[in-house]
Image 1 (cartoon, helix red, strand yellow):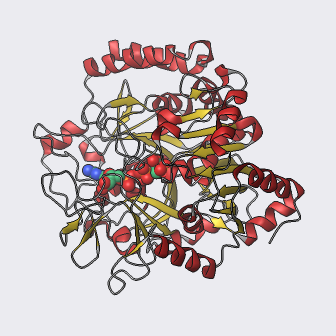
Image 2 (cartoon, protein in one colour):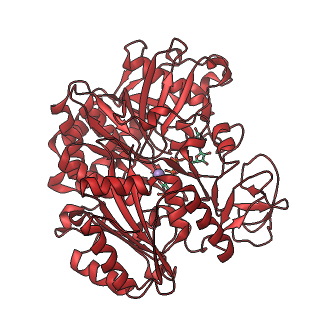
Length: 581
Ligand code: GTP
Ligand code: SPV
Ligand code: MN
Protein backbone atom coordinates (compact mmCIF):
# COMPACT_ATOMS: atom_id res chain seq x y z
CA UNK A 1 0.00 0.00 0.00
CA UNK A 2 1.01 3.60 -0.41
CA UNK A 3 -0.65 6.97 -0.80
CA UNK A 4 -1.37 9.70 -3.33
CA UNK A 5 -0.19 12.30 -0.80
CA UNK A 6 3.34 13.16 -1.88
CA UNK A 7 4.34 14.77 1.41
CA UNK A 8 3.39 11.63 3.32
CA UNK A 9 5.09 9.36 0.79
CA UNK A 10 8.36 11.24 0.94
CA UNK A 11 8.28 11.53 4.76
CA UNK A 12 7.80 7.75 5.08
CA UNK A 13 10.73 7.21 2.68
CA UNK A 14 12.92 9.69 4.54
CA UNK A 15 12.17 8.09 7.94
CA UNK A 16 12.79 4.60 6.55
CA UNK A 17 16.16 5.76 5.22
CA UNK A 18 17.07 7.03 8.69
CA UNK A 19 15.67 4.20 10.82
CA UNK A 20 16.22 1.22 8.41
CA UNK A 21 13.18 -0.96 9.12
CA UNK A 22 13.11 -4.44 7.64
CA UNK A 23 9.53 -3.96 6.43
CA UNK A 24 6.94 -1.19 6.18
CA UNK A 25 3.29 -1.94 6.93
CA UNK A 26 0.59 0.60 6.02
CA UNK A 27 -2.23 0.11 8.54
CA UNK A 28 -5.72 -0.13 7.03
CA UNK A 29 -7.45 -0.33 10.44
CA UNK A 30 -9.34 -3.53 9.60
CA UNK A 31 -10.36 -6.11 12.20
CA UNK A 32 -8.28 -8.69 10.33
CA UNK A 33 -5.24 -6.47 10.70
CA UNK A 34 -5.88 -6.08 14.46
CA UNK A 35 -6.13 -9.87 14.77
CA UNK A 36 -2.85 -10.42 12.98
CA UNK A 37 -1.13 -7.77 15.15
CA UNK A 38 -2.37 -9.64 18.23
CA UNK A 39 -1.22 -12.99 16.79
CA UNK A 40 2.27 -11.69 16.11
CA UNK A 41 2.53 -10.21 19.62
CA UNK A 42 1.38 -13.49 21.16
CA UNK A 43 4.21 -15.18 19.26
CA UNK A 44 6.81 -12.57 20.26
CA UNK A 45 5.67 -12.49 23.89
CA UNK A 46 4.66 -8.79 23.75
CA UNK A 47 1.18 -10.01 24.68
CA UNK A 48 0.00 -12.88 26.87
CA UNK A 49 -3.49 -14.33 26.37
CA UNK A 50 -5.71 -14.03 29.46
CA UNK A 51 -8.43 -16.57 30.32
CA UNK A 52 -10.34 -16.73 27.02
CA UNK A 53 -13.47 -18.30 28.60
CA UNK A 54 -14.06 -15.57 31.15
CA UNK A 55 -12.17 -12.72 29.40
CA UNK A 56 -12.60 -13.43 25.67
CA UNK A 57 -10.16 -11.59 23.38
CA UNK A 58 -8.42 -10.03 26.40
CA UNK A 59 -4.64 -9.80 26.48
CA UNK A 60 -1.97 -8.69 28.91
CA UNK A 61 1.04 -6.58 28.03
CA UNK A 62 3.82 -6.36 30.62
CA UNK A 63 5.89 -3.30 29.89
CA UNK A 64 9.49 -2.77 30.89
CA UNK A 65 9.49 -1.99 34.66
CA UNK A 66 11.20 1.34 33.94
CA UNK A 67 8.48 2.27 31.45
CA UNK A 68 5.11 2.37 33.20
CA UNK A 69 4.00 6.02 33.11
CA UNK A 70 4.37 9.35 31.35
CA UNK A 71 7.80 10.92 31.74
CA UNK A 72 7.22 14.63 32.21
CA UNK A 73 10.90 15.41 32.85
CA UNK A 74 11.77 13.92 29.45
CA UNK A 75 8.97 15.68 27.55
CA UNK A 76 9.96 18.85 25.66
CA UNK A 77 8.36 21.63 23.65
CA UNK A 78 10.86 22.76 21.00
CA UNK A 79 10.06 26.29 19.84
CA UNK A 80 12.66 28.69 18.37
CA UNK A 81 11.92 31.13 21.23
CA UNK A 82 12.12 29.54 24.69
CA UNK A 83 9.55 32.00 26.07
CA UNK A 84 6.89 30.55 23.76
CA UNK A 85 7.17 27.18 25.52
CA UNK A 86 6.96 28.97 28.87
CA UNK A 87 8.10 27.99 32.38
CA UNK A 88 5.40 25.29 32.32
CA UNK A 89 7.35 23.23 29.73
CA UNK A 90 10.81 21.76 29.36
CA UNK A 91 12.40 23.45 26.38
CA UNK A 92 15.07 22.56 23.86
CA UNK A 93 15.97 24.47 20.69
CA UNK A 94 14.56 22.76 17.57
CA UNK A 95 18.06 22.39 16.07
CA UNK A 96 19.48 20.69 19.14
CA UNK A 97 16.44 18.47 19.54
CA UNK A 98 16.54 17.39 15.89
CA UNK A 99 20.21 16.56 16.12
CA UNK A 100 19.73 14.54 19.28
CA UNK A 101 16.69 12.66 17.93
CA UNK A 102 18.29 11.91 14.55
CA UNK A 103 21.18 10.32 16.38
CA UNK A 104 18.82 8.13 18.40
CA UNK A 105 16.73 7.19 15.36
CA UNK A 106 19.69 6.24 13.16
CA UNK A 107 19.20 2.56 12.30
CA UNK A 108 16.88 2.03 15.30
CA UNK A 109 14.28 -0.01 13.37
CA UNK A 110 16.74 -2.57 11.94
CA UNK A 111 15.12 -5.99 11.90
CA UNK A 112 11.74 -4.49 12.81
CA UNK A 113 8.57 -3.54 10.96
CA UNK A 114 7.66 0.12 10.70
CA UNK A 115 3.91 0.64 10.96
CA UNK A 116 2.44 3.60 9.08
CA UNK A 117 -0.58 4.51 11.20
CA UNK A 118 -2.96 7.10 9.70
CA UNK A 119 -5.53 8.26 12.26
CA UNK A 120 -8.30 10.79 12.64
CA UNK A 121 -8.91 12.58 15.94
CA UNK A 122 -12.65 13.32 16.06
CA UNK A 123 -15.60 12.01 14.03
CA UNK A 124 -14.27 11.26 10.57
CA UNK A 125 -16.74 13.63 8.86
CA UNK A 126 -16.45 16.43 11.44
CA UNK A 127 -15.06 19.85 10.49
CA UNK A 128 -13.50 19.88 13.97
CA UNK A 129 -11.59 16.61 13.45
CA UNK A 130 -7.85 16.58 12.67
CA UNK A 131 -5.69 13.83 11.19
CA UNK A 132 -2.25 12.58 11.93
CA UNK A 133 0.10 9.81 10.88
CA UNK A 134 2.23 7.96 13.41
CA UNK A 135 5.23 5.95 12.23
CA UNK A 136 6.09 3.39 14.90
CA UNK A 137 8.10 0.19 15.21
CA UNK A 138 5.75 -1.07 17.95
CA UNK A 139 2.89 -3.45 17.09
CA UNK A 140 1.50 -2.65 20.59
CA UNK A 141 1.21 0.98 19.50
CA UNK A 142 -0.49 0.00 16.22
CA UNK A 143 -3.02 -2.21 18.06
CA UNK A 144 -3.73 0.43 20.72
CA UNK A 145 -4.17 3.13 18.07
CA UNK A 146 -6.80 0.90 16.42
CA UNK A 147 -8.76 0.76 19.70
CA UNK A 148 -8.24 4.41 20.67
CA UNK A 149 -8.64 6.34 17.41
CA UNK A 150 -10.38 6.23 14.04
CA UNK A 151 -7.38 4.55 12.47
CA UNK A 152 -6.69 3.29 8.95
CA UNK A 153 -8.25 3.70 5.52
CA UNK A 154 -10.89 6.39 6.18
CA UNK A 155 -8.27 8.53 7.96
CA UNK A 156 -5.80 8.14 5.09
CA UNK A 157 -8.54 9.07 2.61
CA UNK A 158 -9.27 12.24 4.59
CA UNK A 159 -5.56 13.09 4.62
CA UNK A 160 -5.45 12.58 0.85
CA UNK A 161 -8.47 14.87 0.44
CA UNK A 162 -7.25 17.62 2.77
CA UNK A 163 -3.50 17.28 2.38
CA UNK A 164 -2.95 18.15 6.06
CA UNK A 165 -1.74 15.94 8.89
CA UNK A 166 0.37 16.01 12.06
CA UNK A 167 3.50 13.85 11.81
CA UNK A 168 4.47 11.59 14.71
CA UNK A 169 7.56 9.41 14.74
CA UNK A 170 7.94 6.81 17.46
CA UNK A 171 10.48 4.11 18.20
CA UNK A 172 10.56 1.87 21.25
CA UNK A 173 14.34 2.05 21.09
CA UNK A 174 16.19 0.23 23.87
CA UNK A 175 13.73 1.28 26.61
CA UNK A 176 16.68 2.91 28.32
CA UNK A 177 15.48 5.81 30.52
CA UNK A 178 18.69 7.65 29.61
CA UNK A 179 17.80 7.40 25.93
CA UNK A 180 14.17 8.45 26.22
CA UNK A 181 12.64 11.69 24.90
CA UNK A 182 9.21 12.96 23.92
CA UNK A 183 9.76 15.98 21.66
CA UNK A 184 7.19 18.39 20.23
CA UNK A 185 7.87 20.78 17.36
CA UNK A 186 4.60 22.75 17.24
CA UNK A 187 5.70 24.99 14.37
CA UNK A 188 6.46 21.89 12.25
CA UNK A 189 3.35 20.01 13.46
CA UNK A 190 5.80 17.25 14.36
CA UNK A 191 6.17 14.88 17.32
CA UNK A 192 9.20 12.66 17.94
CA UNK A 193 9.21 10.02 20.65
CA UNK A 194 11.98 7.58 21.49
CA UNK A 195 12.68 4.96 24.12
CA UNK A 196 9.24 4.34 25.66
CA UNK A 197 6.34 2.09 24.78
CA UNK A 198 3.98 3.51 27.43
CA UNK A 199 0.59 5.11 26.54
CA UNK A 200 0.98 8.86 26.70
CA UNK A 201 4.63 8.65 25.58
CA UNK A 202 3.98 6.37 22.61
CA UNK A 203 0.34 6.61 21.47
CA UNK A 204 1.08 9.94 19.82
CA UNK A 205 -2.51 10.78 18.82
CA UNK A 206 -3.42 11.25 22.47
CA UNK A 207 -1.51 13.66 24.71
CA UNK A 208 1.17 14.64 22.15
CA UNK A 209 -1.16 15.47 19.25
CA UNK A 210 -4.65 16.00 20.72
CA UNK A 211 -3.36 18.16 23.58
CA UNK A 212 0.16 19.59 23.14
CA UNK A 213 0.12 20.21 19.38
CA UNK A 214 -3.64 20.82 19.23
CA UNK A 215 -3.55 23.37 22.07
CA UNK A 216 -0.95 25.31 20.06
CA UNK A 217 -3.12 25.18 16.92
CA UNK A 218 -6.25 25.98 18.94
CA UNK A 219 -4.73 29.20 20.20
CA UNK A 220 -3.90 30.32 16.68
CA UNK A 221 -7.31 29.32 15.35
CA UNK A 222 -9.56 30.42 18.22
CA UNK A 223 -10.60 27.17 19.91
CA UNK A 224 -9.53 25.06 22.93
CA UNK A 225 -7.93 21.61 23.28
CA UNK A 226 -8.42 20.45 26.88
CA UNK A 227 -7.79 17.54 29.29
CA UNK A 228 -11.54 17.10 29.82
CA UNK A 229 -14.16 14.39 29.95
CA UNK A 230 -17.52 15.11 28.28
CA UNK A 231 -20.65 13.67 29.89
CA UNK A 232 -24.32 13.72 28.88
CA UNK A 233 -26.91 13.94 31.66
CA UNK A 234 -30.62 13.43 31.10
CA UNK A 235 -33.13 14.22 33.84
CA UNK A 236 -36.23 12.09 34.49
CA UNK A 237 -38.17 14.82 32.61
CA UNK A 238 -35.98 14.33 29.55
CA UNK A 239 -33.95 17.55 29.90
CA UNK A 240 -30.42 17.03 28.55
CA UNK A 241 -27.20 18.75 29.58
CA UNK A 242 -23.59 18.25 28.60
CA UNK A 243 -20.77 18.94 31.03
CA UNK A 244 -17.03 19.11 30.28
CA UNK A 245 -14.73 18.53 33.23
CA UNK A 246 -10.96 18.88 33.59
CA UNK A 247 -9.27 16.86 36.35
CA UNK A 248 -5.56 15.98 36.43
CA UNK A 249 -4.40 12.47 35.48
CA UNK A 250 -5.92 9.69 37.62
CA UNK A 251 -8.29 12.13 39.35
CA UNK A 252 -11.63 10.74 38.21
CA UNK A 253 -12.45 11.72 34.61
CA UNK A 254 -13.17 8.20 33.31
CA UNK A 255 -15.25 7.44 36.40
CA UNK A 256 -17.35 10.61 36.16
CA UNK A 257 -17.89 10.12 32.43
CA UNK A 258 -19.29 6.61 33.06
CA UNK A 259 -21.24 7.39 36.24
CA UNK A 260 -24.17 5.19 37.30
CA UNK A 261 -26.88 7.13 39.20
CA UNK A 262 -27.50 6.07 42.82
CA UNK A 263 -30.84 4.39 43.55
CA UNK A 264 -32.57 7.54 44.79
CA UNK A 265 -31.76 9.23 41.46
CA UNK A 266 -32.67 6.20 39.39
CA UNK A 267 -34.72 8.19 36.84
CA UNK A 268 -31.55 9.96 35.68
CA UNK A 269 -29.52 8.78 32.69
CA UNK A 270 -25.82 9.40 32.26
CA UNK A 271 -23.96 8.73 29.00
CA UNK A 272 -20.33 9.11 28.00
CA UNK A 273 -19.15 11.32 25.15
CA UNK A 274 -15.47 11.27 26.16
CA UNK A 275 -13.29 10.41 29.14
CA UNK A 276 -10.01 12.30 28.66
CA UNK A 277 -9.85 14.97 25.96
CA UNK A 278 -12.26 17.61 24.63
CA UNK A 279 -11.88 19.93 21.67
CA UNK A 280 -14.08 22.98 22.22
CA UNK A 281 -15.29 25.38 19.54
CA UNK A 282 -17.75 28.28 19.50
CA UNK A 283 -20.44 27.74 16.88
CA UNK A 284 -22.03 30.53 14.83
CA UNK A 285 -24.52 31.22 17.66
CA UNK A 286 -21.78 31.63 20.26
CA UNK A 287 -22.57 28.25 21.84
CA UNK A 288 -19.52 26.30 23.00
CA UNK A 289 -19.54 22.79 21.49
CA UNK A 290 -17.33 19.84 22.35
CA UNK A 291 -16.07 16.84 20.41
CA UNK A 292 -14.11 13.95 21.84
CA UNK A 293 -11.15 13.43 19.51
CA UNK A 294 -10.70 9.84 20.71
CA UNK A 295 -12.78 6.75 20.04
CA UNK A 296 -11.48 4.52 22.82
CA UNK A 297 -10.31 4.65 26.41
CA UNK A 298 -6.87 4.17 27.97
CA UNK A 299 -8.10 3.98 31.55
CA UNK A 300 -6.73 3.44 35.05
CA UNK A 301 -7.47 -0.16 36.13
CA UNK A 302 -6.95 -0.16 39.95
CA UNK A 303 -10.08 0.83 41.85
CA UNK A 304 -12.42 -0.34 39.06
CA UNK A 305 -15.07 -2.66 40.52
CA UNK A 306 -18.77 -3.48 40.37
CA UNK A 307 -19.57 -0.81 42.97
CA UNK A 308 -17.32 2.08 41.88
CA UNK A 309 -17.73 1.76 38.12
CA UNK A 310 -19.94 -1.11 36.96
CA UNK A 311 -19.89 0.18 33.38
CA UNK A 312 -16.10 0.04 33.13
CA UNK A 313 -16.00 -3.25 35.01
CA UNK A 314 -18.31 -4.83 32.40
CA UNK A 315 -16.66 -3.03 29.49
CA UNK A 316 -13.27 -4.61 30.13
CA UNK A 317 -14.60 -8.20 30.27
CA UNK A 318 -13.90 -8.75 26.56
CA UNK A 319 -11.81 -7.39 23.68
CA UNK A 320 -9.47 -5.38 25.90
CA UNK A 321 -5.73 -4.95 26.24
CA UNK A 322 -4.52 -4.82 29.84
CA UNK A 323 -1.14 -3.26 30.58
CA UNK A 324 0.72 -4.10 33.81
CA UNK A 325 -2.06 -5.76 35.80
CA UNK A 326 -1.59 -8.86 37.98
CA UNK A 327 -2.95 -12.31 37.06
CA UNK A 328 -4.93 -14.85 39.14
CA UNK A 329 -4.29 -18.59 39.25
CA UNK A 330 -7.13 -18.88 36.68
CA UNK A 331 -5.29 -16.53 34.35
CA UNK A 332 -7.76 -13.70 34.87
CA UNK A 333 -6.54 -10.12 35.17
CA UNK A 334 -6.39 -8.86 38.76
CA UNK A 335 -5.89 -5.47 40.38
CA UNK A 336 -6.18 -3.76 43.76
CA UNK A 337 -9.84 -3.14 44.72
CA UNK A 338 -11.15 -5.43 42.02
CA UNK A 339 -13.44 -6.87 44.68
CA UNK A 340 -12.99 -10.48 43.60
CA UNK A 341 -10.27 -13.09 43.08
CA UNK A 342 -6.68 -12.90 44.26
CA UNK A 343 -3.37 -12.39 42.54
CA UNK A 344 -1.02 -15.28 41.78
CA UNK A 345 1.42 -13.29 39.65
CA UNK A 346 2.27 -9.59 40.01
CA UNK A 347 2.48 -7.02 37.19
CA UNK A 348 6.08 -7.96 36.50
CA UNK A 349 5.15 -11.64 36.08
CA UNK A 350 6.69 -12.73 39.39
CA UNK A 351 4.90 -14.89 41.96
CA UNK A 352 2.87 -12.46 44.06
CA UNK A 353 4.13 -11.70 47.57
CA UNK A 354 1.94 -9.65 49.88
CA UNK A 355 4.91 -7.73 51.28
CA UNK A 356 6.42 -6.59 48.00
CA UNK A 357 4.04 -3.81 47.01
CA UNK A 358 0.82 -3.81 45.00
CA UNK A 359 0.12 -6.75 42.68
CA UNK A 360 -1.06 -4.58 39.79
CA UNK A 361 0.98 -1.48 38.97
CA UNK A 362 -0.86 1.58 40.42
CA UNK A 363 -0.85 3.01 36.88
CA UNK A 364 -1.92 -0.23 35.17
CA UNK A 365 -4.27 0.55 32.30
CA UNK A 366 -6.95 -0.93 30.06
CA UNK A 367 -7.41 -0.12 26.38
CA UNK A 368 -10.86 -0.64 24.85
CA UNK A 369 -12.96 0.73 22.05
CA UNK A 370 -15.54 3.26 23.32
CA UNK A 371 -18.24 1.25 21.57
CA UNK A 372 -17.93 -1.35 24.35
CA UNK A 373 -19.00 1.13 27.00
CA UNK A 374 -22.54 0.28 28.23
CA UNK A 375 -23.08 4.04 28.75
CA UNK A 376 -21.71 5.05 25.31
CA UNK A 377 -23.54 8.01 23.77
CA UNK A 378 -24.05 7.88 19.98
CA UNK A 379 -23.60 11.67 20.08
CA UNK A 380 -19.87 10.96 20.47
CA UNK A 381 -19.97 10.44 16.70
CA UNK A 382 -21.92 13.62 15.96
CA UNK A 383 -19.73 15.78 13.68
CA UNK A 384 -21.19 18.97 15.27
CA UNK A 385 -20.19 17.91 18.79
CA UNK A 386 -22.42 18.61 21.80
CA UNK A 387 -23.39 21.95 23.42
CA UNK A 388 -21.66 22.49 26.77
CA UNK A 389 -23.68 23.91 29.70
CA UNK A 390 -20.96 23.84 32.34
CA UNK A 391 -17.19 23.58 32.58
CA UNK A 392 -15.97 21.92 35.76
CA UNK A 393 -12.43 21.99 37.11
CA UNK A 394 -11.26 19.71 39.88
CA UNK A 395 -8.28 18.32 41.70
CA UNK A 396 -7.30 15.78 44.29
CA UNK A 397 -7.07 17.83 47.50
CA UNK A 398 -7.20 16.20 50.92
CA UNK A 399 -7.75 19.65 52.45
CA UNK A 400 -8.97 23.11 51.55
CA UNK A 401 -11.04 22.81 48.37
CA UNK A 402 -14.75 22.31 49.14
CA UNK A 403 -16.93 19.71 47.44
CA UNK A 404 -18.14 22.23 44.86
CA UNK A 405 -18.24 25.95 44.13
CA UNK A 406 -19.27 28.12 41.21
CA UNK A 407 -17.32 30.96 39.64
CA UNK A 408 -18.96 34.38 39.52
CA UNK A 409 -18.45 34.81 35.78
CA UNK A 410 -16.16 33.71 32.92
CA UNK A 411 -13.17 35.82 34.00
CA UNK A 412 -13.43 34.47 37.53
CA UNK A 413 -13.88 31.00 36.01
CA UNK A 414 -10.53 31.34 34.24
CA UNK A 415 -8.94 32.16 37.61
CA UNK A 416 -10.67 29.14 39.17
CA UNK A 417 -9.22 26.97 36.37
CA UNK A 418 -5.79 28.57 36.73
CA UNK A 419 -5.90 27.87 40.48
CA UNK A 420 -6.28 24.08 40.12
CA UNK A 421 -3.74 22.21 42.23
CA UNK A 422 -3.72 18.48 42.84
CA UNK A 423 -1.83 15.66 44.52
CA UNK A 424 0.41 13.88 42.02
CA UNK A 425 -0.55 10.32 41.00
CA UNK A 426 1.11 7.25 39.47
CA UNK A 427 0.11 8.39 35.96
CA UNK A 428 3.47 10.16 35.70
CA UNK A 429 6.83 9.00 37.04
CA UNK A 430 7.96 10.73 40.23
CA UNK A 431 6.67 11.11 43.74
CA UNK A 432 2.97 10.40 44.36
CA UNK A 433 0.78 12.51 46.68
CA UNK A 434 2.67 15.80 46.41
CA UNK A 435 0.35 18.78 45.86
CA UNK A 436 1.41 20.75 42.80
CA UNK A 437 -0.12 23.53 40.74
CA UNK A 438 -1.87 22.10 37.69
CA UNK A 439 -3.84 24.90 36.00
CA UNK A 440 -6.83 23.60 34.02
CA UNK A 441 -5.36 20.09 34.65
CA UNK A 442 -3.07 20.91 31.70
CA UNK A 443 0.34 21.26 33.40
CA UNK A 444 1.80 18.28 31.51
CA UNK A 445 -0.13 18.96 28.30
CA UNK A 446 -0.30 22.67 27.48
CA UNK A 447 1.94 22.99 24.40
CA UNK A 448 2.80 26.68 24.96
CA UNK A 449 3.32 29.38 27.58
CA UNK A 450 0.61 29.21 30.26
CA UNK A 451 0.47 33.03 30.33
CA UNK A 452 -0.60 33.07 26.68
CA UNK A 453 -2.97 30.18 27.38
CA UNK A 454 -4.82 32.05 30.14
CA UNK A 455 -5.05 35.10 27.85
CA UNK A 456 -6.55 32.86 25.17
CA UNK A 457 -9.09 31.48 27.66
CA UNK A 458 -10.05 35.02 28.75
CA UNK A 459 -10.54 36.10 25.11
CA UNK A 460 -13.62 33.88 24.81
CA UNK A 461 -15.59 36.44 26.83
CA UNK A 462 -15.17 38.88 23.92
CA UNK A 463 -16.44 36.33 21.41
CA UNK A 464 -19.61 35.08 23.06
CA UNK A 465 -22.16 36.10 25.66
CA UNK A 466 -23.42 32.52 25.98
CA UNK A 467 -20.42 30.89 27.57
CA UNK A 468 -20.88 27.98 29.98
CA UNK A 469 -20.94 28.49 33.74
CA UNK A 470 -17.68 27.47 35.44
CA UNK A 471 -17.38 25.31 38.58
CA UNK A 472 -14.76 23.61 40.77
CA UNK A 473 -15.20 20.24 42.50
CA UNK A 474 -13.15 18.10 44.88
CA UNK A 475 -14.16 14.47 45.47
CA UNK A 476 -11.02 13.80 47.51
CA UNK A 477 -11.35 15.65 50.85
CA UNK A 478 -10.12 13.44 53.71
CA UNK A 479 -10.94 13.05 57.39
CA UNK A 480 -8.53 12.60 60.31
CA UNK A 481 -8.08 8.87 59.58
CA UNK A 482 -7.33 9.52 55.94
CA UNK A 483 -10.82 8.39 54.94
CA UNK A 484 -12.60 10.12 52.04
CA UNK A 485 -15.29 12.46 53.41
CA UNK A 486 -17.43 12.27 50.26
CA UNK A 487 -18.57 8.85 48.94
CA UNK A 488 -17.80 9.84 45.34
CA UNK A 489 -18.45 7.82 42.17
CA UNK A 490 -22.23 7.51 41.49
CA UNK A 491 -23.02 9.93 44.32
CA UNK A 492 -21.18 12.66 42.37
CA UNK A 493 -24.39 12.99 40.34
CA UNK A 494 -25.81 14.92 43.32
CA UNK A 495 -23.18 17.58 42.72
CA UNK A 496 -23.72 17.55 38.93
CA UNK A 497 -27.42 18.06 39.60
CA UNK A 498 -26.72 21.21 41.62
CA UNK A 499 -24.40 22.38 38.83
CA UNK A 500 -27.12 21.88 36.19
CA UNK A 501 -29.71 23.59 38.37
CA UNK A 502 -27.36 26.55 38.82
CA UNK A 503 -26.97 26.78 35.04
CA UNK A 504 -30.76 26.83 34.76
CA UNK A 505 -31.09 29.36 37.61
CA UNK A 506 -33.06 26.88 39.71
CA UNK A 507 -30.96 26.21 42.80
CA UNK A 508 -29.72 28.27 45.71
CA UNK A 509 -26.22 29.10 46.90
CA UNK A 510 -24.36 31.25 49.39
CA UNK A 511 -21.82 33.81 48.31
CA UNK A 512 -18.27 33.40 49.63
CA UNK A 513 -15.01 35.12 48.65
CA UNK A 514 -14.04 32.13 46.45
CA UNK A 515 -17.40 31.88 44.66
CA UNK A 516 -20.93 30.50 45.13
CA UNK A 517 -21.25 27.42 47.35
CA UNK A 518 -24.35 25.32 47.92
CA UNK A 519 -25.72 25.17 51.45
CA UNK A 520 -26.46 21.62 52.61
CA UNK A 521 -30.15 22.27 51.87
CA UNK A 522 -29.31 23.18 48.26
CA UNK A 523 -27.97 19.68 47.54
CA UNK A 524 -30.20 16.65 46.95
CA UNK A 525 -28.92 14.31 49.67
CA UNK A 526 -31.99 12.03 49.75
CA UNK A 527 -31.08 8.43 50.45
CA UNK A 528 -27.45 9.27 51.22
CA UNK A 529 -26.12 8.34 54.63
CA UNK A 530 -23.74 11.09 55.54
CA UNK A 531 -23.35 12.95 58.84
CA UNK A 532 -24.45 16.58 58.75
CA UNK A 533 -21.08 17.64 60.26
CA UNK A 534 -19.35 15.95 57.33
CA UNK A 535 -21.46 17.88 54.85
CA UNK A 536 -20.74 21.10 56.73
CA UNK A 537 -17.04 20.33 56.53
CA UNK A 538 -17.27 19.58 52.80
CA UNK A 539 -19.05 22.90 52.22
CA UNK A 540 -16.89 25.18 54.36
CA UNK A 541 -14.44 27.87 53.30
CA UNK A 542 -11.71 28.66 55.81
CA UNK A 543 -10.52 32.25 55.07
CA UNK A 544 -7.06 31.78 56.64
CA UNK A 545 -6.19 28.67 54.65
CA UNK A 546 -7.55 30.29 51.47
CA UNK A 547 -5.47 33.41 52.06
CA UNK A 548 -2.39 31.20 52.26
CA UNK A 549 -3.53 29.41 49.09
CA UNK A 550 -3.90 32.71 47.24
CA UNK A 551 -0.47 33.89 48.39
CA UNK A 552 0.93 30.70 46.93
CA UNK A 553 -1.05 31.14 43.70
CA UNK A 554 0.18 34.71 43.34
CA UNK A 555 3.77 33.57 43.73
CA UNK A 556 3.19 30.87 41.12
CA UNK A 557 1.70 33.32 38.61
CA UNK A 558 4.76 35.56 39.03
CA UNK A 559 6.83 32.84 37.34
CA UNK A 560 5.04 33.80 34.13
CA UNK A 561 5.95 37.49 34.47
CA UNK A 562 4.45 39.87 31.96
CA UNK A 563 2.75 37.05 30.05
CA UNK A 564 0.13 36.83 32.81
CA UNK A 565 -2.94 38.66 31.45
CA UNK A 566 -4.20 41.68 33.38
CA UNK A 567 -7.68 40.17 33.65
CA UNK A 568 -6.35 37.19 35.57
CA UNK A 569 -4.21 39.34 37.86
CA UNK A 570 -7.16 41.65 38.55
CA UNK A 571 -9.41 38.70 39.34
CA UNK A 572 -6.81 37.26 41.71
CA UNK A 573 -6.51 40.57 43.55
CA UNK A 574 -10.29 40.83 43.80
CA UNK A 575 -10.61 37.42 45.47
CA UNK A 576 -7.57 37.99 47.69
CA UNK A 577 -9.10 41.27 48.91
CA UNK A 578 -12.44 39.57 49.61
CA UNK A 579 -10.62 36.90 51.64
CA UNK A 580 -8.92 39.56 53.74
CA UNK A 581 -12.44 40.78 54.49
P1 GTP B 1 -6.35 9.66 33.40
O1 GTP B 1 -6.77 8.54 32.51
O2 GTP B 1 -5.00 9.43 34.01
O3 GTP B 1 -6.44 11.01 32.77
O4 GTP B 1 -7.29 9.62 34.71
P2 GTP B 1 -8.82 9.92 35.03
O5 GTP B 1 -8.96 11.36 35.43
O6 GTP B 1 -9.71 9.42 33.97
O7 GTP B 1 -9.05 9.10 36.40
P3 GTP B 1 -9.96 7.82 36.71
O8 GTP B 1 -11.42 8.09 36.51
O9 GTP B 1 -9.40 6.66 35.99
O10 GTP B 1 -9.73 7.65 38.27
C1 GTP B 1 -8.47 7.44 38.85
C2 GTP B 1 -8.59 6.82 40.22
O11 GTP B 1 -9.41 7.62 41.07
C3 GTP B 1 -9.23 5.43 40.17
O12 GTP B 1 -8.52 4.57 41.02
C4 GTP B 1 -10.63 5.67 40.69
O13 GTP B 1 -11.16 4.55 41.34
C5 GTP B 1 -10.47 6.86 41.63
N1 GTP B 1 -11.69 7.71 41.67
C6 GTP B 1 -12.41 8.14 40.60
N2 GTP B 1 -13.50 8.84 40.99
C7 GTP B 1 -13.47 8.88 42.34
C8 GTP B 1 -14.32 9.46 43.34
O14 GTP B 1 -15.35 10.10 43.06
N3 GTP B 1 -13.94 9.30 44.66
C9 GTP B 1 -12.81 8.60 45.00
N4 GTP B 1 -12.53 8.48 46.29
N5 GTP B 1 -12.00 8.02 44.08
C10 GTP B 1 -12.31 8.16 42.78
C1 SPV C 1 -3.00 10.60 31.67
O1 SPV C 1 -1.90 10.36 32.20
O2 SPV C 1 -3.61 11.68 31.87
C2 SPV C 1 -3.65 9.59 30.81
C3 SPV C 1 -2.89 8.41 30.43
O3 SPV C 1 -4.78 9.78 30.40
S1 SPV C 1 -1.70 8.75 29.18
O4 SPV C 1 -2.24 8.30 27.90
O5 SPV C 1 -0.50 7.99 29.49
O6 SPV C 1 -1.43 10.15 29.12
MN1 MN D 1 -5.53 11.83 30.92
